[in-house]
Length: 285
Image 1 (spheres, rainbow, N blue to C red):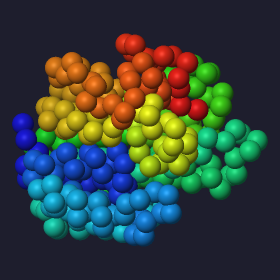
Image 2: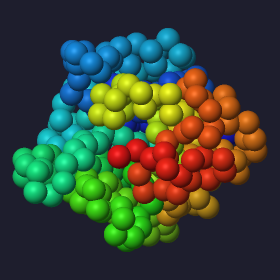
Image 3: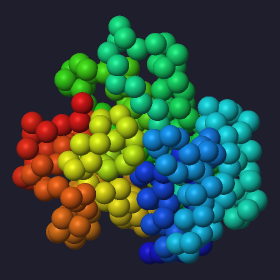
Image 4: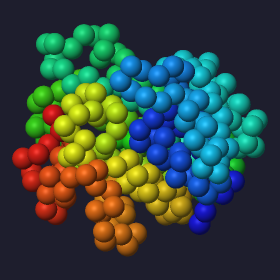
């Protein structure tokens, strides 16, 4: 199955994993609508919605840059309408936009708490909500949310209760929509990386030394592509890890995704357990 002519609407996507997913789809000739606020480069986070759109076009796809805030109901509804007007429909929704603050409970401000929940959980719910009527018209509709598997092991809450709640809120969107939309053939899944991923955001939050312990964003892009090309009526309600998806697809050499380090030196991401030769003591904090 190819994504040629398929239309993706994605929150965020001006850089990092979201942009990598968009570029992988663009190589097939997909249409990608990006909803993002970034019109000017951040001092330490390069990339804007316009540079991402240009890269999508250069990769062989068609791009639509929609500048606005995923917390704004009217903007999201209008963005969905403009995507349908430009490309004729919507086949795939990617809930990529996410805010992060790893502060402990007594240190985090309620403004940051509200921001994370409004972007992460509410934003994912909102984009899916307005896209559902158009997904019904697709032959293979997918909703993919970049969020972790839900585990109630207290260790995942210990260091950052607020952030865990916000990311699990995104995962609950997957859990709910997968059942709500199952009979209509609209798939809803979540995808999360096994390890740290080498993005500017990771370097900014975790420090540049983390990049050597990371995999390239291409691993998430390739895993997302595998999900998008699965039959939506058969592949839904799953909390997927990137290397598991690719291993099931026949990938055996993961060294192509290394960012200059080694498999043993990869840092394990939050909410997942190590697999293979990874050092379990190396984990994102």
